[in-house]
Length: 57
Image (tube, rainbow, N blue to C red; front, side, top):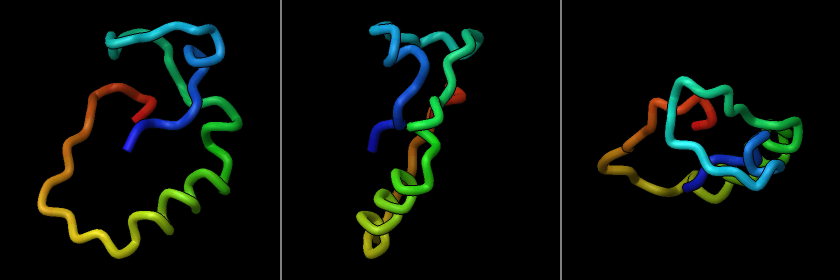
């Protein structure tokens, strides 16, 4: 699963540096997006979860 919309998405940029200010936009943090992801994953039995140090995750 990928992160939601960020300020860098809006600028057409990519970032792999956790020290840069890349954050979710209002659209990215909308309840509807989080709710949709929760519904999609509610019956998934995870064996492993891998996360990133980037703040957008």
